[in-house]
Image (cartoon, rainbow, N blue to C red; front, side, top):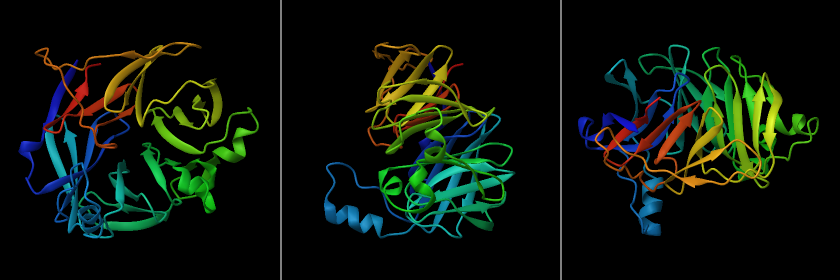
Length: 292
């Protein structure tokens, strides 16, 4: 069962959703663009898509919950169309670019404080309250150059890489990351990853491989860990699977408090997000959070 926590009709109609994320406490985060036009709807015309990509927003807005209230922070410095990732950082925010290799750190009022180099082709970025930043990369970074060839990296507060997956993976004989499809960094620092091409599920605890399930199968780009099973979004469908060898995926229905079925939107990165045991769905009209 899911609870509605943010309705889009309560936000300005000219804001366009860029990313759905979850913070280290399990609360939903939205990154929304102002002034860049609406994302083209499928079937997508190549010319319309190109025009949209080349039109940078005038501002980005971080939408978050404070208690039961919806709050926003406006950010106008150092942004672009490829600003794709949002997470809390200290008392402010960090926004990461999908391409270009940088992330910007902002204060509580949206002022730009500093820029960090985090590697090109960022698939996901998740922070912890101690200042660590975990970054995963897709194939164009893994088969590119620089730090992103590691597939998964942890940076400390100073921006120094303190964990590099490719360098580490030979020790426990884990498959290399070709494209890190999904990452789940829990609030207490466990890191779960599911990646192409072997699609194992790997649990890192204190930066060491604690458990792994080889050839577990793809879980799309968002999964929550609840007890002895995972719940995940794949192709906008809600699925579950037990954490044991040879287990089979099962379909699940997402419903609200009244028993109405919920259908996540079909756009990747916008259909939902997860961290720890928290799972967030976007139906296109509202953001819902799974009941504990």
